[in-house]
Amino acid sequence: MFYQTTVTLPISRMKALISLIDMIQEQATEKSMTDTEVLALHLASDMLPFSRQIQIVSDNARGMASRLTGKENPKMEDTESTIEELRTRLNNTIAYLETFEESDFAEAATKEARFPWFPGMHMVGADYILGYGLPNFFFHVVTAYDILRHHGFEIGKSNYMGQSLPLVADKV
Image (cartoon, rainbow, N blue to C red; front, side):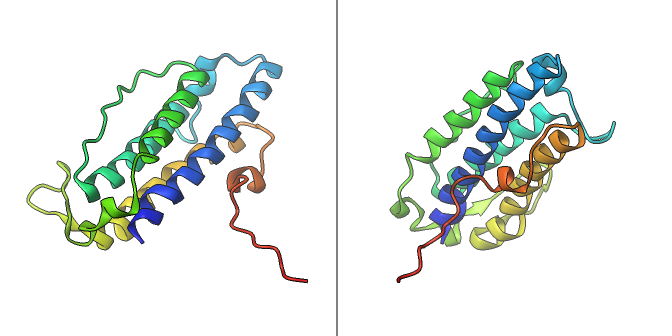
């Protein structure tokens, strides 16, 4: 379960985000929008911009896998200033997740996850992943999508879902 929820699932969502980024980059050019303008888009004035949503998606994906395996989480500076740099960050995060194997998660059920914003408290294994890790990850994936939709980019649910649907052909 832990490999699927912290490696394969986040990879599929980040690949879908990369496809969205490819689509909106072309549309932004057609709208005469600069990368700086696209990265600064947000839903509300008190919400984080598009660029930060992508950075947090990356941080969450790496953090879930590293916390449950004890592997070092590579630090990524939040300095992306172009659409291409956001794409590269997602690709680098995917490459990191692809280094994990199911066996790396053998002790995941008992691994503690600690955060500075929850002082003196922690979460463990599945409670961390299902109660905090994945909901937070998906919040930022969906918010990135919503920002783009809100600002008139021509994308739809099928673009959010991506190409990695687990469809199996019926036997005839």
